[in-house]
Length: 140
Image 1 (cartoon, one colour):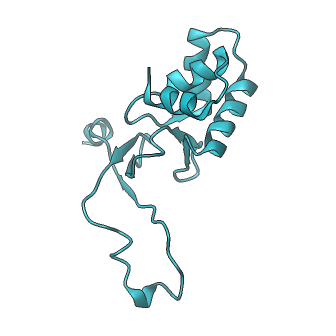
Image 2 (cartoon, rainbow, N blue to C red):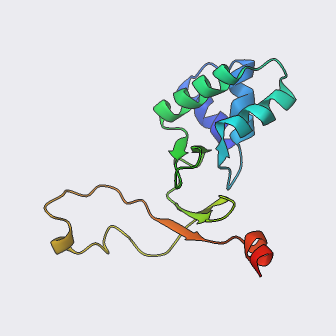
């Protein structure tokens, strides 16, 4: 059973066949699919699943805090099931591929007190940008 399915079961979330297939599609490391990609993959497993069901399920998973929405540069939102593992993102500026990264250090501690402007900072989001190996080779 996947980590996401285990978490959902632990919460007592009712796992219909549609919800289960969406959770299964989202399972794994470095998974950052758009809603349309989730629907396409889910429909291969469960042809009768509707786009609305996928969108509603993703919305519920985000509301539960089990999946994070990741927005990158005006592209379609992506859905990250690693909501319980601290990480940042590495995004290809060309194709939009997103990878989870785990930099060392504490970015919150790196913000000097003078630059906090009195804010009680509780979270930091860092996005690293560059070219993935395939896009870098294509440009070379």
